[in-house]
Image (cartoon, rainbow, N blue to C red):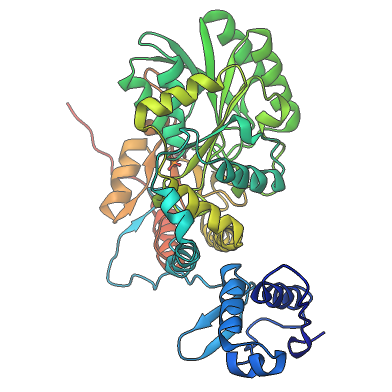
Length: 462
Ligand SMILES: Cc1ncc(COP(=O)(O)O)c(C=O)c1O
C-alpha cells in the first residue's frame, strides 16, 4: 500500500479522517514512508482519496499529534526523523575561563524543540488541558502514574502504579518519607559518604545520621549488621546505583545481602535511584528484590530536565497511604500540568531520545576526562555524571579545593558528602556533566592534572 492507495471503508463507524490517519501511521511504521519524506499536499491527497481537503487536514493533525510527522512552517508536512539528534549541545563558552565541575546536572542541551512539541501536543487536546487545571487525586492522575510505571517497567523496574505517587523530584520524595516517618531525635542510617541533600534534610529535622562503612560496592554488609545492632532505627537511606559521590554500583549479591540484613532487623530501605536509569546494565533495583521493604525514589531530573521537577515514589503497601497523606499535607498534589508534560515526553519517545543523547555526551566527557586523569586514583562508571578523585598524599583537601578555585575550577570537597562527625577523606567529586562544553571540560581536567602533579605551596604557622 502507498499513501495514494489508502482504503476508506464507508461502512466503518470510525471517522474517515481517523481511518486515513491510522493508515498513514502504519505506512510510517512499516517504513513505506521514511524519515524526512514530505507528505503530499492536502489538496492532492484529498483528490486522490476522493475526500474533502478538511478531512486530510484533520488526518495530518492526528498523525502529527501522535508524533509521526511534523508540520514545518511554509514547507509542508514531513515524516519525523526519530533518529535525528535534535538537541545540539550549547555553543562553547569561550569568553569565560571558569570550569565548573560542581553540579550533577544533565549536560547542557537545547530542550526547547522537544518542549515545544510536547506542549503543542498537549494543547491540541483542550478538554484534557482543562482537566489538568482541576484538583486531582493527591498521588497523581491514574493515567499518568500508569504511563510512568509502564516506562519504568520497560526499563526493567518491577513497580506497581497503585503504589506510586508523584513528587517534585527525588529530593522532595525523600522529604515526604522523612516527614512521614522520622521525628526529631530519630536515627537514620546512611552511607559513609552520602548525598548532601539527605544531610541537609536530617539537620533541619534534627535527625541523627549514623554512617555505615562502604567499599567499592557501597555499604558493607558486616558494617550494616553492626550498625543495626548498635542503633535503634527503622530506616536506611541508600543509593545502590551510581552512588553520589563514589559512583559505586552494588552487585546483585550485595543487594541481596543488604536486604536480608534489613529484613532481619525490620528496617525499611529508602532507595534513592535518581541516577538508576542512567546506568547501563546495572543489577535490578532494590525494589525489584523486596517490594515490601523498599521505598523507591526516582525523578526525571537527571535524564530529562531538573527544571521539570517531576519525580516519583513507589512504596510498600503498608506505608503507602501515610506517604500520600504527607504529600497532600505538603501541596495536595504535584502540578498535573507538569506530570502531563513528562508523560507526553515519555509517550512521544523524546524522553528516550533525550536519555540517549545524554548518555552519548557523558561517554565523550568521560573519555576526555580519563585521557587526562586516568592514571590517578579515580572512580568512574559509564553513564555517571560524576567521578570521584582521591588526592595524592602531598595535597591537603582544603588546599587543593582552594588551589583549583584560584584557577577558576570548581570542584566539590569530600567534606560536603560526609555526615556530621564523620572522617573526611581527601577526595573531590567532579561533575563531568556540569561544564557547559567538552572544550571547557578538557581545559578543566588538564589544569586539574597539572595541579595534582605539582607540589602545593607549603605554608606554616607559629
Ligand atoms: C543522590 C541524589 N538524590 C537526589 C537528588 C535530587 O534530585 P531531584 O533534582 O530530582 O530532586 C540528587 C541530585 O543531584 C542526587 O544526587
